[in-house]
Length: 205
Image 1 (spheres, rainbow, N blue to C red):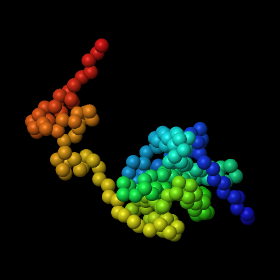
Image 2: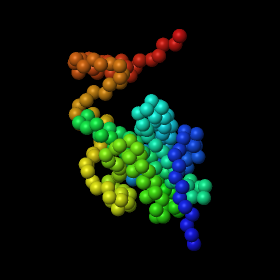
Image 3: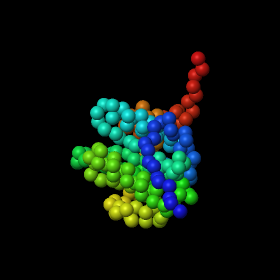
Image 4: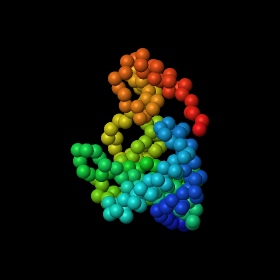
């Protein structure tokens, strides 16, 4: 039986509602794989990233973000989210980060993920990026095998810890008011200020 061709197209902010089921599925799988920060409100951030990228293109600076969807016979079966980031202060080269590649259940293992990943190379050539980078969960055995087959090798080990845990370990007082930059308070003064903030009530007009 002849397979239907896979089509890939860029996504605009108007298309995002139709992608909600795919994103919900991805977020559920990402949370199960212990990907930090995977949440169902991600489409709001995607909409912001798309708008910022459009502004960058209009200003002549090139795209900073791209979302593409794969379709088969008009059915949306997967997507890829790509961000353009700087390598750091020591170099002026950029990299394309694959935020996510997702193919819905029944359509996996049909080469659709590879078709989507090709778009990272297209974007990298467009913005003259030197590398394509992917972030994968350490316990995601299948996804790590997929990227390894595509030629991605381990480069760094990125470790993560909750801020609350590090605050306790290093004895850092939480800043309840981000506008408060006072750093020369004594421990007693900091405790009194924290209590005052916690017990402060808004004054009714």
